[in-house]
Length: 198
Image 1 (spheres, rainbow, N blue to C red):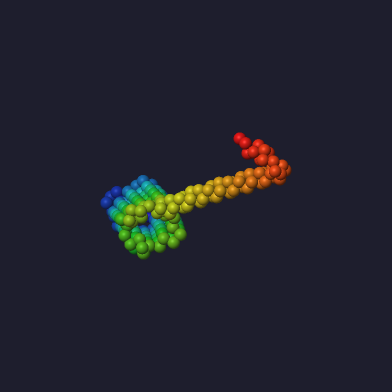
Image 2 (cartoon, one colour):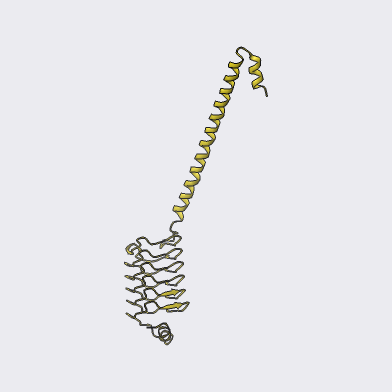
């Protein structure tokens, strides 16, 4: 099915598109909210900023698709395939993710707040930097903070060690010079006093 035919039918009130092939389709900024897209082939599709809220995408193939900033709020994504898909800044809040495949998908800054069954989803090698997880935590934020803290702590330790080494070296040099001056003028307290006189 072509993009214009899909949009025409949707505008006419049609919502049932189960099993339709939409491979490589280009859609941008349009609404397919509430559509029945079970088992639809949307692989390599461009769906940037598309509204798929409350859509049923059970078993749909969206591998290698571009869903940048797409709205998937409350959509059913169980058993859907998003392998290598781009979901940057996509809204996946309150979605059903039962056995959803996100392998190698890019979910940077995506919103997964309230999504269910994420523990059953395949997130192997998925990119989740900055994504809001179902419990509201931001993925990677804590780990990056601790890494940064670790860097600062190592820098501080190195600075302290360097100061200590410099102090030891300075004291050692002072003692060596004092000893040399004393040996050069044995028994001469005057020379020793002159050496240390401000």
